[in-house]
Length: 314
Ligand SMILES: [Fe+2]
Ligand SMILES: [Fe+2]
Image (tube, rainbow, N blue to C red; front, side):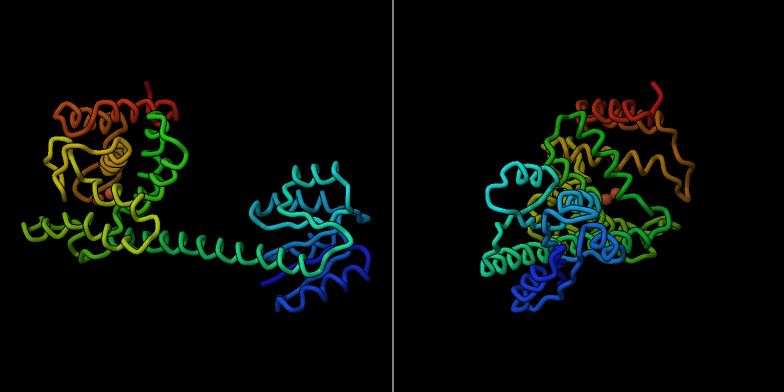
């Protein structure tokens, strides 16, 4: 891991760098904000430790500029005791932490260590998220017609969720759930997914297993309980005719995902038919509501979400 030390006083810089030595991190140094930014053009450090008053570019300006590049990069500002006004400005600029001068070196080490650990954890989470998306692309690549399906479905479902008044955390889960809803298709042989021949009864059964397969695949994730309804139930219907569980009560946001899924399937190109126009696909959703398979409230929200975002003409 890398720590950047920014201070115009060479003696102070040495002192800080020596204090960090036991952490066994790579330490970079710069004499002011401008030099720091130049140094970081290719690669960001994991923690930045910066002096406040420096010529050319001070610590506040540097903090602002770093936070604009990466809002989660930890920045520690070194301030003199009693600089309350400056601290407030520092918080405003996005600084994560403050250390009083003269610096207590043991405290400095502990603070930097804490920020490094949090940063490492956060990078791990980001990597996990990216891995999931890579996995989804692999699934979508099995069928030329489903490229980008997850992302489009997520977008449509979120439009409906907003109309339904979903909270931010709910929308985040819906987003992830929508991206991953078909992940279980990875367990289905490619020739079945390609859809270039009429499917046998046995092949249909395999396809209809994908929500359960997906539920199993995501099992080890900490977010599994929150993502599960989307992955497992996106083919359920309110009249009990859906699969895999034949539910007759389905959470509204899961229905928003089902509606988005149907809508995207109908409006994208398939081998066996031309794509429907937005208003035609919406009519198909309204038909689902009339048959009691989808709630009217969800279809209404879906329609107004499309209208509001000009994806449908009134
Ligand atoms: Fe599906
Ligand atoms: Fe789907």
